[in-house]
Image (cartoon, rainbow, N blue to C red):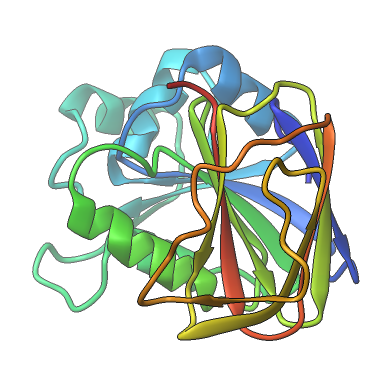
Length: 225
């Protein structure tokens, strides 16, 4: 997976193609959005249509209950004949969860416009994405979250050094966690969800590696203080 700040490679590699979901949280800057949109199919989720309009980039589909998107952006989508999948405001799932249901299990997805705003929305999205078979990357120019599951390892090549690297257990425990080229290294460590202490680490190289024997681990990069 190529992002403006880094390249993330999994072993084993288990996805075939990539899409971009644009959600309605903190709006990514236009340079970031244009970079991640290039060569990828785009799903806009509710307010996410606004940055598509600002950059004149046309999504494959627009999904949501449209309780927050500007009317001018919705009018732009209609004028440009962008397919719209409308959901009721009163529903059991969030707009982002409904958009993720459209993904094939062998597709990886970048979700931008996911950070900022209400904590409950971010909490829901982080846990929802961790449990999808698809590879999900939450990203904008400031922050990145992705997941490493039992039996997987990742190698990350940075084009921009992160301010902080944090390892956050999503499952009750993550066992056999091993890192390379972090300031505080882990070797076959056991991390606990109820005591997430492996945060605010630092990358000591432009390349790092992280592996997990069991459990689901969220990897978090922060690119500003």
